[in-house]
Length: 433
Image 1 (spheres, rainbow, N blue to C red):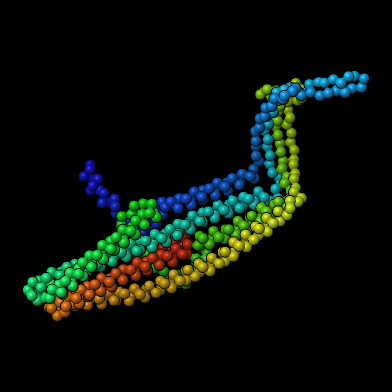
Image 2: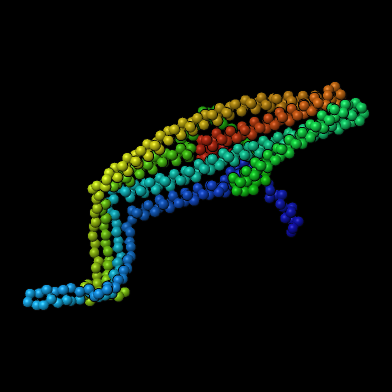
């Protein structure tokens, strides 16, 4: 069994695809915290709805008087006399049913406000997921670029090792100067150092990715993202302004502010409530009377209250709520401009990266051809070892440049989808997997 587990362990460490990484976003602790706040907002909304229903309370009170309750009788022609009117022990039990008939729309406004805040919390959760996806995409694409750079360096390492063997043979036969042999050897160690550097860089990025996803990520698997069409590129700003969850959350903030205004205005109206009480009293828990007054004290009634003046605090509260609404409105308008600018800049960056990538691919192709030519010339001792080393290093650099641009193109393409909103990203980008 132990040997079987050791055999299966490498299978458990399979590379994570881009989609699998995004499926792990909900393990992020910040996301879990936001989900709890969303749940809290939903519970507060349900709690607010309860205020629109009747409330039923049960009460039981028990007191013992210091003296037996009595009354004094003053009758003409008779001396003053006293008579007991109760017992020293007195208990009362009641069921109180109350229902708000009118609260100046305070209850409906508070319910609307709680509902909007619950919806706003849900939008914030989705927007957090979108932002986390951006971060994961950046790390994922950079890791892939590092792996491509390592592959290019390892290819150069293999080439430089072969060249070193030939150079060593030339040197042993007195056909190559020692300085040229040392030059190839130095480049060999330089490539080794670069490989180690990029391997460490890749591991650091994997560590960051593991931290964000709260899951150990050993390696990632290369993938491709569906590219934007020309028409879609022209529509991204409209998509972002209509679908972005953070914009929708800010729009909800305006609605919340409006509900706060309605809640503040409710103080200008009277409050009317209906009350029904089933009440009994007595000198024991049986509540069957005390022998002096009736045991049943039940009643129904209606109460109304209207604040006529409170130092203008209600008026100031309404003004403050209106100012908050205007502030939320201007914040939204400002943020819309930021989103438009962000999307437009990303769209332009995509076009730039596409042009740079075409140039880099041609550069890499030319560098590869030149390296083969240089290798042949060196084998025939037509060029120096230093020129060969530079050609091999330039080829590795050209391949690394291509890998970096491909990685950034993937990152910016995914970013542009994400800048349109999580729902757009799911429909347009992730459906291909």
